[in-house]
Image (cartoon, rainbow, N blue to C red):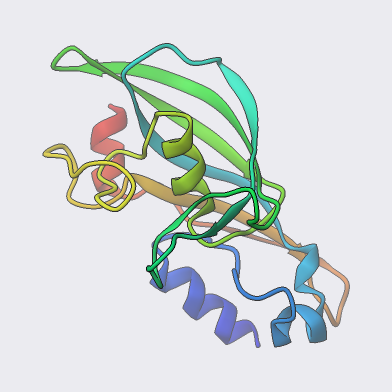
Length: 171
C-alpha cells in the first residue's frame, strides 16, 4: 500500500492527503482517518486586507449541475481550514500572500473553495478564481503530510520541496 501512497504523492505535485468518501476502503481498513495535513504551502491573491491568520469553517458540497465544482452550501459536509500568512509581496501593484494551510477535514477542493469563499482565490486557479500570467497552474503545493502507519503504528512524514515555478513567485 505504500507504493499507492507514493504514487498519489507524485501525481498531486506534492505530499497530498488521500481524499475520498469517508467510507473509502483505505481509510476504513488502514486507519487513514489519522492522516494529518500539517503544512500546505499555497499562494493566494489578496486584493483587500485579510487577517494574518484565521479559520474558515463553512460546509462544502457539490455545486448544482456540476460533477467537478464544489461550493459553500448549508447542506454540505463540514469543512474546516486554518490559515496563517507567512509572507506578503507585491507584483504590478497587486499584493500576494504565501499561506500555511492546515486542514481539519479533507473535502474535495477544500482549500480552493475556502480561499475563494473569503475573496482570496489561489493564484492561477481558473475554476475558482482566475488564470494568471505569473504561473500556468494553481499556485498550490502540499509541502508535508504526516500519518501513523496503520500496521506498524510508526509516525511517517513525507515532504515535497516547493516546485521551481512557485519558488520564482516567492523570490
